[in-house]
Length: 149
Image (tube, rainbow, N blue to C red; front, side, top):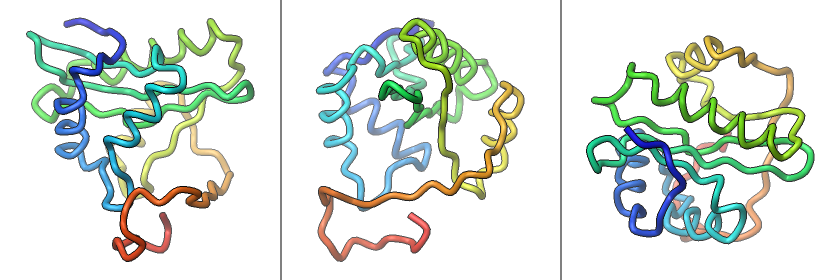
């Protein structure tokens, strides 16, 4: 098992993992998300490789105020082996190293298993409403979108 920064050659395997984990949405082009991340703090885009196969990912960022974790995914057949815990520990370490006082992440409200995993790592639900506004469309304007996203 190797935890390391993302390499451009990992792109297809990483996106396949995201699709399998249910993280990709029709209105977000994952290739654009990868390209955007590689233009900003690429060293904070993490993967775990097991026997030369990408089995887990986390996209970490720090804006000078808060750290964020996106695209944390673990291949289904590799879950329960501590990979998510290792990625989160490395994300926290890298953010602390940069002077980041707080880490944030978003989990879909119906994903009880993942919420429980994060609670086990010391994360708590906050009474904050996350709001967003799309500035650049990745997909056709008629791509199906649920009202909450």
